[in-house]
Length: 145
Image (cartoon, helix red, strand yellow):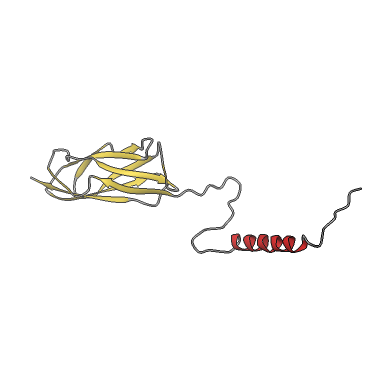
């Protein structure tokens, strides 16, 4: 049988260590409005798919000719580049064709499409939305005759 022996000169150190551990534990459990502390259940996956407009916005192009620059977006999941994710592009105002209408992100999270203005000259808006996301970005272009 073993016996635990605590020397009285060690007692202040033990008490201080216990107080320090309790303080650290208390601070780590404190609720902070910046974070969501809910516990995910089995099979639940908390994903935040974000999209950001990179380049190709505010261009002017001639009707029936592709714009000079592609419309480029960046997609991330919880701030990490999202590879092989589908993004849908669609004209939401004005007239134009997109090639392709949906595209897959590369290993760095980027994808693009090309807009060709059609119909009457004017403002064209293109919306890009990643699959399974409630976020989107809007590109604006102007077509001239």
